Length: 291
Image (cartoon, rainbow, N blue to C red):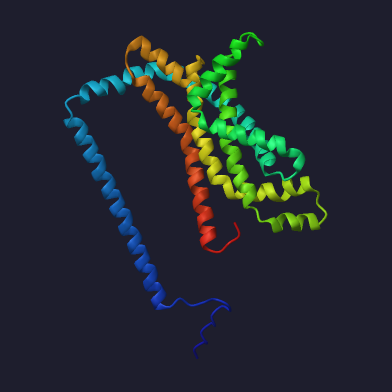
């Protein structure tokens, strides 16, 4: 006597043949897309390599910009200069975050007493966003010491001040847009629950605004990573300045390539994080989730 077949587990949905065909088609299409992508990448790489090899001046360019000897020689000095860039970047990020938040809060305030500060903040953001960063570095780097009030100041400190003042204007406008994008009902709901105006701002408005403008803030951060290298115009021995010193002594431009690679390696993690977070927000918006 044969035993009865076990009943299917409750709640388990059987997959139809149509759905299995769809999954197989998706896998096939995905594999095809990967194969085409790899093939196109190889073809492009071959075109670039062949084009460079056929260029008459490639041997000279290779020796001038991609010399393994000079790469190994200058790498320690350029890497040591990069630590200065990292220290300045950390301090600048903190300074920009504090100053930009204060400016954004002032510009979004509706208190009549804050009117003079709102005017000053509006003028500040307008002026600072209109001045090229390298010009601002010259103005701060040579203007402040010219006053003769503080004695000799380290160029790295002056460069950090210029970067904070310049990028605070950009970040403040991004934050202001985020604050204004929070629906007024959120503030009204928070006040109805007994929160003060300050508590509403810090506990309700700012967290929602940061979530909305995080991709834009990360783009500003990546841009600031690169502009930190401009402090070399003031004489600070960072990665760029260390590369300039090596080039001046050897007349070989490989140190600039070394500095470029180090800055790229420093930026890539944040670029990938920014792309991942932007894609995550896009998927949540398309799926109807709460952003």
